[in-house]
Each structure stands twice: as structure tokens, then as C-alpha cells.
Image 1: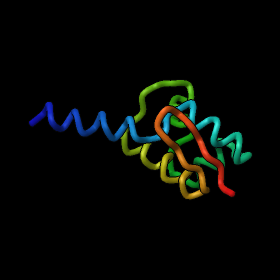
Image 2: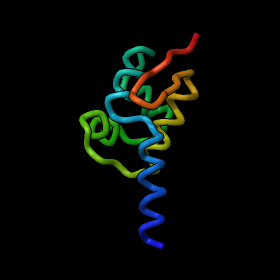
Image 3: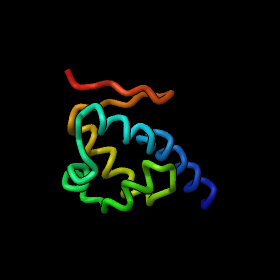
Image 4: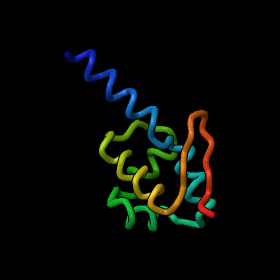
Length: 85
């Protein structure tokens, strides 16, 4: 059961935005970290850590992911980012 749960969590993390993608998406949107804080509800220090490659809680990563997608950003496997048209 634990192994199955860990496998599901790992799959979810792999499908979400990475810290590097987050920083790139913010730059393309001309969005500050403070803007992302307001849109996602995640503390700025967590965003800073995430963009620097540190692990953050899955629930915070999901909120960041949702906030960027709401702005029209799409993410694909392999790290590609698409901008809104």
C-alpha cells in the first residue's frame, strides 16, 4: 500500500511544473514572485526554494501549477512550455 501511494505521488510530481519551468513561465508572463504568491496562495520563500530546485510540499507545487495554467501556460513532457496566444 505504501509503495503504491509513493508511486502515485511520484507520478503526480513528474506531471507537474518543475522549479525551472516555474521561473521560465513567470519570466515569459512578466510575472513577479509576488504576483505568483497572490495567484497561488503559496509563500514567497517556498516559491524561491522551488525555483532553486528544492523540494516543496506537493500541495504547494500543485497550487503553483494551477496558478500558471490559469494564466494560459501549458507544460509538456520533456520540459517544454507553451505560452498563451
